Image 1 (tube, rainbow, N blue to C red):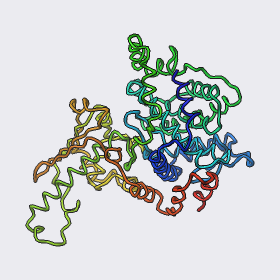
Image 2 (tube, one colour):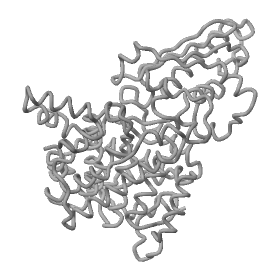
Image 3 (cartoon, helix red, strand yellow):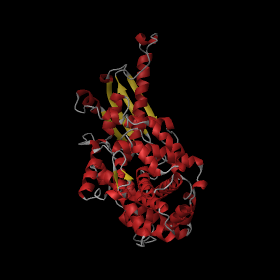
Image 4 (cartoon, helix red, strand yellow):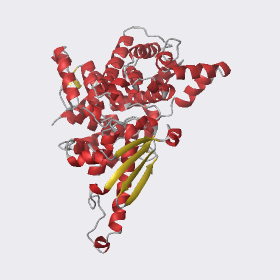
Length: 482
């Protein structure tokens, strides 16, 4: 039922029927994806992946090297999709959805670009496929999570495999049976374990690359008659039963009393254009840490304002701007972070590498406290062995707040309490910046792009405004040209 319903949506979706607001959000997501991926290409994980593909002769057929590796050269469909997926997820700055608990953009755009370049497709077809990919990723994420995640699976590696497959199926114009088969093949290849994410390895990036790779492979296999099971998602030995057990049990318990429960769920979710609900990130940390970063920065602003307002030397000083530098870190006695369970578990005070650091709440708070932000540029220039950094780190306490647990997943709450020699300063954040309830503007995304890629000509991005009438291959040639 599920694979068929999702396939029907993809096949029937036409560009002219997509709400303008969804197309505009897709364009913003595309800008964000390009900026993050262009920067992520320079990470060690992408370099290693390219070396591995070169050893596997992915770059040997020069007549088939038509798909862009963003930030680099070209490869075939599978190679480009795989590398772009890794690059897009490599710096923890790709878009996401808090209820689906996954990052759709890194997989959906990597998949769509590879096919559009290989097949020389237009922008309207590109956006149709993007909308399909986001829709399927978010619907399945909402269906399977939080239990899928709590069972140890990384949704960006598992669920977005389906999104990749249906994105490619849409672009290849597969019929209903072929699209269902592609979904079936995606499901049996779906993989990704959170142990890789939370132990400081590059396995997390691999999940994204393989989701793209497996989705593309599944669609091409289905195009040529390779069969995949229709009941791969809800079947008694399918995805939900194996990888989201509680969700599976809940669905079938409800079906005992309401045989239309699953149909009603799909009718209510499919065609809602869930891309409108994705968030954007400004800090290169796990999304669960962002509320705490925001609340810390806000609490620190309150502290600085209070210190400045009570400083007689500042009261009549027209040059005083109440900035973050009018205090001494030594005045801070303790920084207490109260947050929900998942976020509080990121309490690693001794990250051993760059991947580990992105999952460390104490390090995120120490960076934000010392440097008044937590951007990638700041992180790359920090001396983590300095007395200043270690001194602040040792003052941080992480606590789980049961009341905050009750607010999730609707919210991702955090409270920061900064105790100083001059008083105690607090702030509470329900949702981090970048969520649709607390959104970034287009200017913010462009600023993020420029910060990540300071030598890039941002004028090129204006072409995205009218990408519907453009050729994707031509756009990528302009984008990649240095």
